[in-house]
Image (cartoon, rainbow, N blue to C red; front, side, top):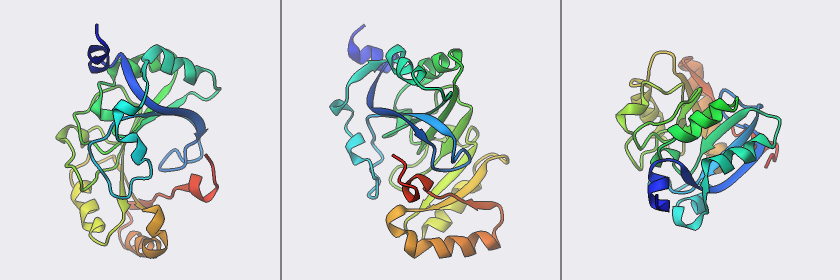
Length: 208
């Protein structure tokens, strides 16, 4: 198989970086986790803090066995697959092998592509820049909407109405506008207790 065919099959993937750290956001904030950041994204958020991940061609293509070998070097058994936009790729082979090795598998995604993979936790963070694929709504465990503009509250409710009934709902201030929106988010959630606040605790604590 050619490299292109191997990537299409999910047997090799472009990896921007992989690192062991502390999860800073959402339900599993505070847990040690091995992050696998895949290269490539076609969503194009204007406030993205990892725009260097957008071009898949910039990053080395690595076999899933080598990716997992990196994760096995650390004691934690929680893996978070992120990007970029990880659902640009077939994630079944990677997640199946991770689970065979005893890992809990999580994903952080905009949901802009068809869902693939075997995940224990799906964090769905929709973006206005590209409409989510319908397959994400029933598998999402956590809906995390980043608040960058006042219209994002209505945007959040639109997606909350489509996820499954057990999905956790979170609003997160965009880091550069936290001073502007944190107080609004607090008041919004006090009136709508189905929602919770998500904070980027790794940035407050300067956790790399």
